[in-house]
Amino acid sequence: MELTVLGQSQTTAPEAGGCASSGCGSNDDQLNHLPEHIRAKVHNHPCYSEEAHHHYARMHVAVAPACNIQCHYCNRKYDCSNESRPGVVSELLTPDQAVKKVMTVAANIPQMTVLGIAGPGDPLANPERTFDTFRQLTEKAPDIKLCVSTNGLALPELVDELCQHNIDHVTMTINCVDPDIGAQIYPWIFWKNRRVYGRKGAEILIKQQQKGLQMLVDRGILVKVNSVMIPGVNDKHLEEVSKAVKAKGAFLHNVMPLIAEAEHGTFYGVMGQRGPTHDELQELQDACSGDMNMMRHCRQCRADAVGMLGEDRGDEFTMDKIEAVDVDYAAAMVKRAEVHAAIEATLAAKQQKKNETFISLSSLSIPKKESRPVLMAIATSGGGIINQHFGHAREFLIYEANAHDVRFISHRKTDLYCSGDDTCGDGESVLQKTINALKGCEVVLCSKIGYEPWGMLEEAGIMPNGEHAMEAIEDAVAAVYKEMGEKGLLDKKPETKQRATA
Amino acid sequence: MALQIVDGCVNCWACEPLCPSQAIYAALPHFLIDAKKCTECDGDYADKQCASICPIEEAIVDSQGEALNPPGSLTGIPPERWEQVRAEIQAR
Ligand code: SF4
Ligand code: SF4
Ligand code: SF4
Image (tube, each protein chain N blue to C red):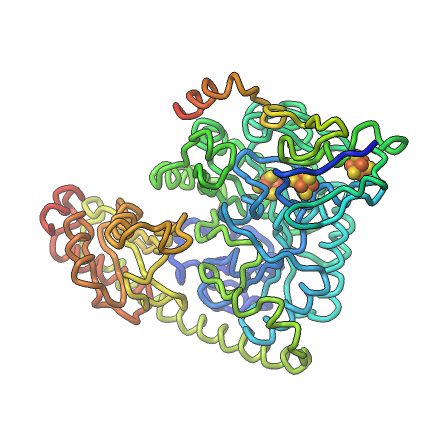
């Protein structure tokens, strides 16, 4: 619940969370100026609130297949790369099927608070299918928030219709505000019944995006902007994009890494365009967060994802399983309200505890100037707790601890391109891949870990730690940091320290 | 006079809603154009709509078998420059 301010008046947003509970630290200050109604809107949205994403769930339905532009990082055989990892294909649903699916999931996963349409193409390039879905859901399931994502090309002409459907969040992918850079990302767009190529197309797209952004903000709709970081193309430019979209009133800017692999058949993949390194990405995210809160926990989920971020329970809710089910939504809504209240209570309790942790942390007897920040990787399957076996973790949450606080930095996936054993290679290379993904971290916290990975991690200078199983993430990170301080590990360079533990 | 969707089509749906003659339909292994219905957009649009949004080079051909989006036309990179551009991109 990162978006509620500590000690603010509790009208609509419960006091749960606050920035400390997710350790998002100073970033949170950027949102303090937001009016209460905006914080109230996003506080239980798993995609916008770092704290909420541990407890609430979202789902996407794939009703919108067509797209009206071409991005060089997208192969249209698969889902929209702006919203999904490349190489993913969603089950395409009709609006009626989608509505049925949403209501079935909402009844079975009461934590599900948000329904998004994110593809598999561009939702606004399929206005009839997208709006039909929203219209029905607004009517039949009023306790579900609706959101939509778009490349922005068709946005200005559809803003008014969007507003009618009472949608309060829109995600736009904006990769540039300069058409010369745009021409290197978008080879063409489809505009007014013609294909428009190169710089000219990019220019139109940029104009439409900026206009659409303005129109949404003017109508009080929250806009999150996503950007894909493409080294050598827009990496230097994204700080300017961040400033521009903030000036227009976007409330979050989220920089995602380009994922380009030849086997996905994207232009960038085939041409060997590289993605950013962890360090490059983090540096840019830090640079942009000076201007605006960044959504670092975004996992680029797939267009038909169901469940908590980072998990996908979509297989439990395929159309053939759903069609037979009858949903009593009135009853489900009562149950849902109860579950939501329980989550809020948990968050509130956690927040109380959190404040104490922070007090003890700041009273550490470590001279601040000598105590350097440390990155730690966490294996968790949700709930804000260290509860996953190292070997089962498909991604790690990266936290930074320093003398002042503990903050969430990012996610790192271990199996970005892994679709099964046949493509993953043998066990050893998977482990090696994981270790590479953890580069820069000094500690990995998990519930359990095998003997072999333990050794390899140590060798790589990463200290495995299973002592904090089932503890809250921030508490454990703070405790480990404190221990490191007591052992005198925090005044040394990481390099030296790594040798010492190896 | 009709266009045809051939191998290469990735079933992305982009063309289907645009056709003024409702000539395009989902099929397997790929989408198809009903030759009896396709007017090549004559009288409706200056540009053939399906061929103007299709993201795949060579997926749509005319009655001569000629691709409406020949190789290099959509990436903006003609085949003879491919290697050079690739080297430039890899240097990024
Ligand atoms: S907007 Fe999405 S679906 Fe369209 S080309 Fe870009 S990444 Fe692909
Ligand atoms: S050329 Fe025009 S009429 Fe023929 S299939 Fe394509 S869109 Fe339809
Ligand atoms: S736009 Fe092209 S690739 Fe997409 S369905 Fe139509 S013919 Fe196939």
